[in-house]
Image 1 (tube, rainbow over the protein chains, first blue to last red):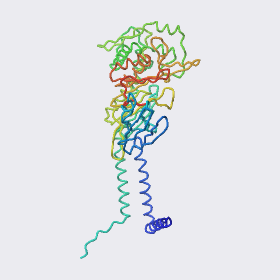
Image 2 (cartoon, each protein chain N blue to C red; image 1 turned 120 degrees about the vertical axis):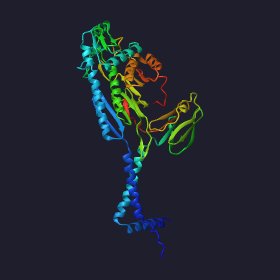
Image 3 (tube, rainbow over the protein chains, first blue to last red; image 1 turned 180 degrees about the vertical axis):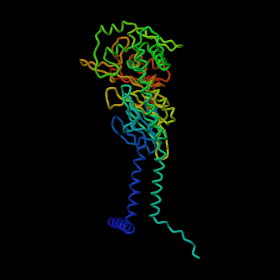
Image 4 (cartoon, chains in turn brown, red; image 1 turned 45 degrees about the horizontal axis):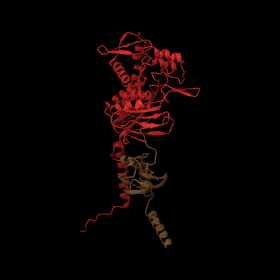
Length: 136
Length: 351
């Protein structure tokens, strides 16, 4: 079965090479390279791609900020629920008494974090936060 | 007659068109991208950086030329010992009314008000004391610890100046009064530079003069054809860790931030750090805080208040900030504790 699939691929490749000129192949290469180069350029404009969830100082999950949904973890005080939507993440519910991490709202930039200290949950968007300027 | 058949386009032509469209899209996106110009110069005894955003590259260059020229003008005019207006005022006979420009008068007026508001913590008459410590205008990195007698002699002499509004006159009360606008001049220069940039019709700009920052507009953030301008983000560096960041401040429309610290100008003698932010009541470097960062509506306010808060210390400093509308602060105590004013929400400042 495997052999047939491989032969099939080789045959296709041969057909491609037979029916194209050097100019064609150069063109295909250009388009491929250009498309590949496009992606990092797009990426550089995006804030943060993922959020790392820590529970009791251990990484328990990495959430892509592009995949929407609600997720929860069980800490010592109860359940902390986070929501990912539109490239952002926030804490929806948390058993902490002062609700500080809930009140913080949405975060989306590299370097930002939500801390639900009582329940030992830390949500962090890794990366160097990009600052326009520094004061010291 | 045969129906004319539509020739199926060869895949090669399709590829050419695709490449052409792609290149055209990139070119258009590049053309739509707003320009950014960044320039640095050593001025005001520190590192000055200006970032500006606008549609026209040449316009940006000229605007930056003028902005830096304005900073040089302010530096020259308000130098305490130079040939400019303030230097001349400081060399005039005490007790003599000296007519000054509206600009210098206004700045001295503001300085006096900060002095009153901060119970004397912000004091622009410390020129002679600074000289005793070696913190002269073109500081070379060296300093000396004055004797107790020298400090007491300075504190014992009356200091101050009066302002006469109608004729724009300033009278220094004594020879001991040497006006030093160092605690406010950088902020003022930033405000002036920003005014120049704003008047040029640019989209946004940021001026940072040695930690005094002010902005206007929002940073263009373009991905292909979509521009979602975002507010400027300023990182507040940790006073003791060169790579550490205390947190990030989001600056909106016209806001300014300034930091005073014990690490900006200092020297060490016998293991003790002596820095340049002197407490007018003791004649010694202010102790209690290692840094104070103030967010305010103008850079002049931020500069003066960061000095005042630093001298006042944690309790009185934060009390002053909490009493002022539109002013917030982040301070770091000698013990390393980070404290913030009551109005600083996490949307504005995030650790």
